[in-house]
Length: 105
Image 1: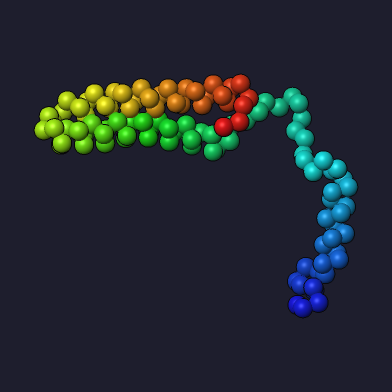
Image 2: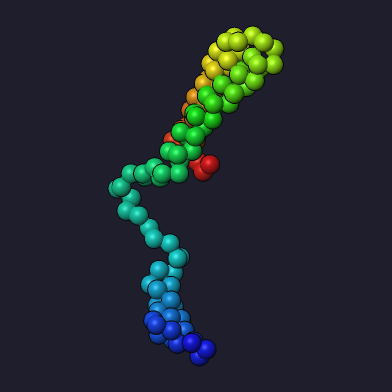
């Protein structure tokens, strides 16, 4: 192993294969056909779902904490649930608009 030989061959073989691959595609990027629509990736969908959930849970937790601190049981939890839901939907809407415009996150 000290001389660079491994189970797949020597480092020289690897360098030669890497050089041939880079010469085949000089930009180092694969280009997609123009007629295929751009698909969403899992990360974007997950981010939007987390933004919705974070808004709702954040509003509920803040409302619960205020209700416990001030002794007013359901009032602040209900109010902050709706505020958190609205904030989560607004953030998700903004993210979807950025995706529709083709901008990165």
